[in-house]
Length: 240
Image (cartoon, rainbow, N blue to C red; front, side, top):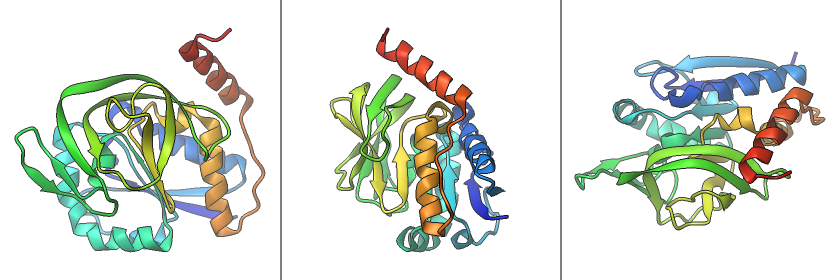
């Protein structure tokens, strides 16, 4: 059986809002494609060769969990840069996105080191950005629905954006774009979990992974997932 290896980084720390649901969605969709998902949970001080994985995932965490993850992930800085350059897939959601820019600035104006894989800088805010979100994307044929609950913003972004905002907020409240898509890096502040809410986006991500692995791909959308997606989107957009 063909396999896809997934590393769920900081599964015990960065798991607010049930973000492990993204892993469950990936497993379900891969199983429907008759591909085995090998999922390893990796946390602080664990040893693992990240270059052996097809996809690396990190979800959202509270302030203390974020700081613990930030301190630990810096030990993997060079390893993660090599993964990024060679085309490993990254799915990064919620405030885990703040780990991958040049720096993270706190409200106390302390600049903390982050991985520097991407150009942007993150800043902690004295307000929260909360609300439902509807986006479009050139990556995916269907609209994206999600939720934001964060207290940080991205500045000086040079990478291509992942989503165009239809309802909600971008990198900063005034922005109309959100998320990062560079090489095989997919990063977004959207939670929900995003893959549970968006089966078409999940399938498009799997299609890209299969293309790299040279696996046969034929789109699969569970009828119940599609029904839930369409109903949720209708409610958000007040359609019908």
